[in-house]
Length: 248
Image (cartoon, rainbow, N blue to C red):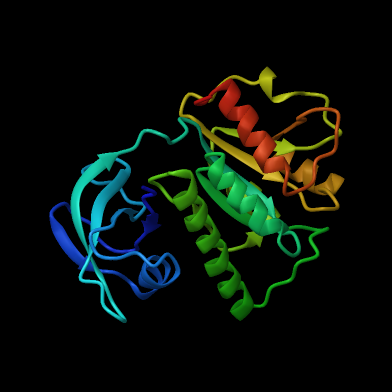
C-alpha cells in the first residue's frame, strides 16, 4: 500500500488528532480519494525533541469538505547531508529556477538564496517578488515531501549578489566559474561543515562579480571541462560535495 507523505505547517505531536489544512485535504481526499483509516505520513520541517523526522498517522473523520488525521508516533529520519550547503542561485527565467530549487532540495541543499546579478534578466517588483518567493518555498516543500526529507530548506527573499557575498559567513565560500582550473577536490572539508556556493545566471557571472566574490573570500572552482547551465550547476555541485565530504 502506498503511504502518502505530506507537509503540514502546524505543530505536530504524538497521540493527537488534528484537522487537515484545506490544501492537504484537497490533495489527500479529493485528488488521491483516500478514505478513513488510510495510513499517511506527515512532517512540518521542524525537529521533534531535537530530532528531524516525520509522524505516522491515520486519516479519519473524512467528510465532504474536511477530514482529520490521528497522529500515532514519531519516526526519526537520518537522511540530511552532514555538509550544510547554502546556494546563492542567480535568478533565471521560466521554469529553470523552479528546477534548480527542486533538484537542489533533492540533492540535500541546506538553504537557497536567490540573487540578482549584472546579467540576470529577471526583474521582480515587490508584490511579484513576494508571490515568487511563496511559490519557490512551495517548490522546496513539494521536493522535500517527494524525497523523504524531514527538513524543508529555506528559500530566502531575493537580494543583490554583491550584498550576499559581502555578508556571507560560511567557512568555505566557493564560486562556480568555468574559467577556473581549480577543482573542488583540492579544498579541505570545512571544520564546521558549512559551505556557501555562488552560481551565476544563464549568461554567467561577469569578471567584476567574480573578482568581487574573491575579494569577499570566495574561491573560484570548476566542476569539469564542460559549461553547465545555471539550473544544472547546483545539482552537479551538490552531488560532488556529498561524494567528497558528505553522505554518498
